Amino acid sequence: MQTYYTWIDSPTGQLLLTANESGITQLVFAEGRHPPDIHPSWKASEDPLREAINQLKAFFAGELRAFDLPLSPAGTPFQRKVWAALQQIPYGQTTSYGSLAASIGNPAASRAVGLANGSNPISIIVPCHRVIGSNGKLVGYGGGLPNKRWLLEFEAFNAMG
Image 1 (cartoon, rainbow, N blue to C red):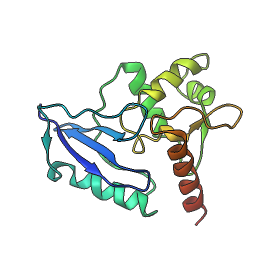
Image 2 (cartoon, one colour):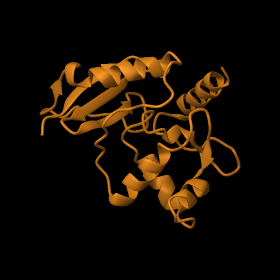
Image 3 (cartoon, rainbow, N blue to C red):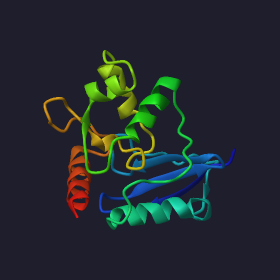
């Protein structure tokens, strides 16, 4: 299955966007905790990623609150369950790892949920930035805490208007 990729400039820095025929596979911060690697077999092309690019531009313009894109992240069934739950967190709101664990029917799994959240390959679109510590503090984010803070403040501001 062919993977396509492109780089996107955003207010949070450069992002690597990848997809295959099934959907978006990654949205990764270039300067994040896990800098992306371009696999030699991938093809640089914006065409198969056009809708995702348009939705990301609309998101960063404050015009889009929920993405509607086919997603194809690689992960375990548990990770996919957590990532699906992340997509249910409303725009401009946050939840804790414990609350997220409870929402998937496993309230004792907050650490496992945290690990799955940290493994999310499709940041922003699958809004792992909306998960914070139970004490309300910002904890862990693959794109760096300054980007997490920016995304949360950006969404909170736009949710008011």
